[in-house]
Length: 296
Image (tube, rainbow, N blue to C red; front, side, top):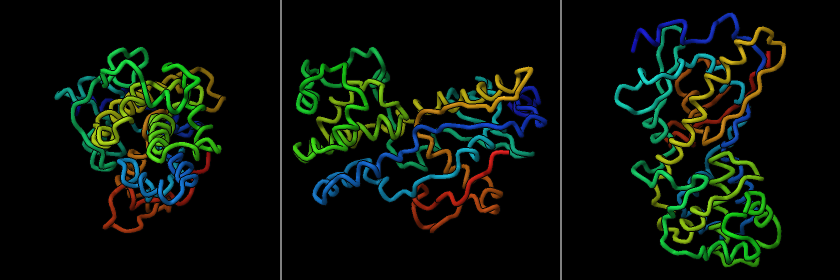
């Protein structure tokens, strides 16, 4: 593996490191505060008791999009040789230092559960639901004018941000908020994307929702786009004319790797791009971005 990591062919050329770029990190979890602001005290108490309630106290990650891009310029070309144990991880080489970001780091930073889950859950075209029920009762209560497969994330957002939410049962209101936070905030889906009906079935039972293997699921989902960042950057840098700004998007819950960057790169802290509030806080809560990297 060391030969692969140290091979210049598996790294971006340093002469191209100043290429202008814009990265759209979709799954920052920012909509959790948007949701929390429209809940009354009783509903806030219910929400805080859910598995996602933990993130209310997590500082909003701002100003670090270009920092993310700068670090990914040091990503090693993904290859199975890097994961002899079969567990996919991301590898970086900064100077003479090799850094690894994998499911272990994702788990320890987010605190989400890691164990087995139905691999087809939440996937487009999935027919195997986590419930044997034929009717999706939660969807029928929340969106009686829709079919199971026609509810979009924008529909959920509209329901939450207008007076319709007030007419719902308190627990149903929290259920729709959790699904919306998951789809847009953690998965980075767009408002026109359809909500997979698996999430309606899961949210019907909040005990199941709270105990679900969110760490495993979000890691698997997020890793795909994080890994592909190497190709997005490489393909742009390989163009004969690179006058245009490199623009790319990354879906999935990217907040964790940004915390990891704060922790792993001393220069990020020394230059004032991140600050640690209290080392006794959990890792997601102790860091905040303090200033932006300017596009060169």
